[in-house]
Each structure stands twice: as C-alpha cells, then as structure tokens.
Image 1 (cartoon, rainbow, N blue to C red):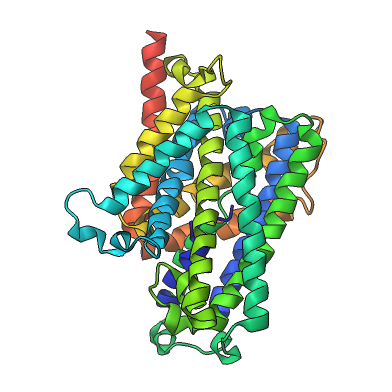
Image 2 (cartoon, one colour):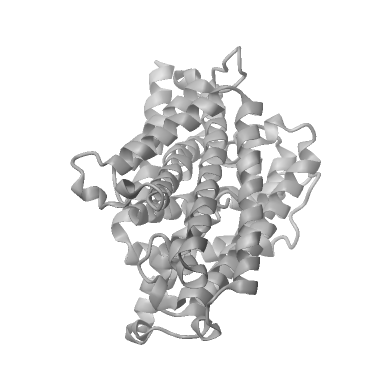
Length: 429
C-alpha cells in the first residue's frame, strides 16, 4: 500500500484545496473506506480463497462478463497505471542523487531519460518476480521492512528535532476562500480520488490467497492489520508534512516529502529522506508487480483465447506471460502522461471497480445465505453501504472535476466488455 502516492498526493490536494483540515479529513475518510473494503474482501476471500481476488468474487456473484471487465480494468488501472505512476515518481526522487534526472523531462526529446530509467525499473522488477514467488516476495519483504522502519523514524525525528511550526497545521491558504460550494464539492471528490489511489493495495493480500497455507485465518489478518497500520502512518505523515511546510509550501509539489523534509531537517536530513522514499516507492512497485498477474492468470483459466496468461513456468511456478503483459502495459503508461493524470485515471477507474466486489458481499448474503463464511465483515451491512455510498459520491463529482481522466476510466470498463464479447464469440465459432 505505501508507495509514491503518500509522497506526492498531498501536494496536489494542497494546491486544489488550500485547507489543512480538509486535507487531513480526506485522508481519514480514505482510511475508513479502505478498512470497510478490507472487511468485505476478508469475508469474500475467506469464502473463496483462490488466486485472482475480485475476478473470482465478480464471477461467482455477477457472472463472467463483469469478472472479465474487472480483470481488464485491473490490468490497466489497478496495476499497470499505478506501477507507472510510482516508478515515474521514483525517478523524480532519484533526481536528488542524480541531477540529470531532476531536469524537466519535456526537454529531453520524444522519450525522456526519466522515462527510460522508469521503464528500466519496470523490467528489472518483472525479472525479479519471474524468478519465483520466494525470490520476488523476499525482495518485497526486505524493502517493505526498510520503508516502514524508515517512516516511523521520520515521524519520530520530526516530533523530536523537526524545525516546523504548529501554526502550519491550522493555517488556511487564501485560495480556499475562492472556492464556491459547487467547486468545493468537486475539489473534495477529486482529492478523494487521489487519496483512494494512495490506499490502493488495501485488498492486495487477497490476490495471493491461492498461495496461502491457511487463507481463512491469515487473509483477514493481513487485510485488516495492514490497512489499519497504513492508515495510522498516512495520517501521521500528513501531519508531519503540514507541520514542516504548511499548505502553501506544499501546494503543487510532486516531491512533498522532500519539500517538508527541507523545512524540517535542512539539506542533510533531506538526503536521508530522499533515500527512504526511493526504497518506499520501489517496494510498492514490487508488491504490485507480484499481485497483478494473479488476476490475469485467473482470467486466462476461464477464457480459452487467453489461456496463455494462465501458463505457469515449470521452473519457477510463476505466471511469466502475465508478468510480461503487465510490464508491456506499464511501459505504455509511463510514456503516456504526467503523474497526476495517471493518478487520477487509476484512482477513478479502480474506485469504480472496487465498488462491484464490495457490493457482492450484500448480493451473496442474500443469494447464498447458507454458504460457509469463516470470516464475516464486521458492521454488516453498514460497512459495504458506507464504502459504496462514498465511492459513488466521489465518482459523480470526479466526472465533473476531471472529465477527461474519468471518461477514460469509463471507456476502459466498456472496452473490457467489448473484448470479452469478441473473445467468447470467437471461441464459440
């Protein structure tokens, strides 16, 4: 879950909102939504502990068409676009150590050096995870442990030795007064889309359920402890950002972690923070590189024309073809747009298709009330209803605030349906 988003998104929110209280509230709302979603996925995953997560849940609830649409959306917006965004951000942070990467990428020709480096990271991660599950997850575990310890150290250092100002946490930018009621609603929804992107991964453990020894027990624990822990870290990090630089200092900055650390610790501390953020972002990209192919693998088992996605390497027991496909799509996203555009597209589209498996908790409770449920979502039916209600409100207003990226998300879902019809008709003939 912890990736580039938490080190970039607050700058966009500070630019658009200019109000620290709204920023912190949206991060809290995003955490509550992620916890509600994790509770629902924990119930579904314990019922159906198979590789593929929402693909399996949608297939069992609403049929193969929506399941395939979900897997197609996962390929583009659920994994490839987020991996592209985090690796583009990683290169920006590496610019602190390699000055040539800090130059404006638009001045470097058709394909910038920044993008070439990001693409190199894509294929390095593909190679690591193609070597086998233990190799890939061992690497991810190592960098994840480093990033969590580093973030906790950053928060502690900011409290003990940071040169911030408490008034920064409550100082409102003059830009906020310029927002009307309709503009505020649209801006809040757009900002929540960014926040939801940062919480992507709350369902990550569910993709690996088919490879867990005891998924009925371990999957709910992984989902809930992981999501709850990350929510606390995100809230604390945003307080640190505001304490260090305030909304005006953060406004529009992509590298908000560096901006805040410069104010808090000066140049020497900023170098250490930049290194931490590079490790953090790389670990997030590594985790998503491992999770995504399990969805395409599940789709390949059901759609004969895509059976090549379900092929497992006899030597490493990994879905290598699915990994390669994801790497190719991620490369295309890296070349396609700016970080904020990719974030908005991925956040809107992933939110759209997160609502469907969450809704299937209610559907299956009604249609299959006697099915074994080793874990039941706490607070049902309020937890799925809260997730669905806030998600729907967010998407409606996001269409008004960011119509291009939102329409691309809707077009992605529609294209998935068209592809499924074409593939199944071809098969029947």
